Image (tube, rainbow, N blue to C red):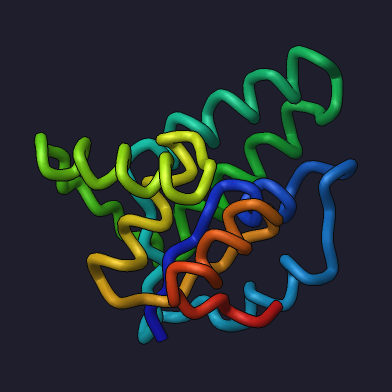
Length: 138
C-alpha cells in the first residue's frame, strides 16, 4: 500500500500532547512493501515542529532522537516535483478548499500520484473528501 502521509499524523507518533491511537494504527502498515509519500516540505515541517517542541519543553532530547530514528526506518519516500506547475496547482487547491499552500501540497501529491491521504488535520481531511481523494481510515 502506498499513501501520502501528512506531518500532523507523523508528529502524533512522538509528541505526547498530540498522541493519537488513530495515528498509532497506521504504524503496523509500515513495511518494505508500502511507501509513505511526503512532499519535500514535510521534512521542514517535522524539523520545525520537533525544534519548537524541544524548545518549549514538550519533549526531551531522547524522545526527539527516538522519533527521528522512527522516521529514518519508516518507508518514507520524498516527492521532489517542484516547478511552476506545482505552484499553480497549490494555488488552485489552496483557493478552492481554503487551505494553506503547505496543506495543499499534501492534497496535490495525493491527486497527482492517485494515492490515499493519511491525516489527522480536519480541514485537510475535509478538502480531500471534497476533492475525491481517498482518506486512509485510521
